[in-house]
Length: 108
Image (cartoon, rainbow, N blue to C red; front, side):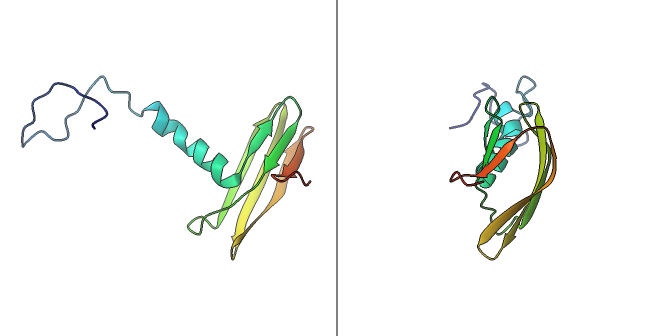
């Protein structure tokens, strides 16, 4: 199913049809990168409790990743992630403010 039915006749010379009322970029597409990063890093923030859980699993096509100035409440943290063989590791590169960072399984 197409995402949008515009009522414009199909012709051989005008595909794709520009549609001026379409929201470009669409919100789901613009925000998808943040969900992807959150998913592959296993990030779960609890700002009121000043906690951040991390359970990273970088894919082979992304052997390293660095997040800078990630805000959790009033704290900011920068983290580096890298992959060695099948395992993903991480470390702090910078932290401002009070924030407890733990592995996704509850370990600190």
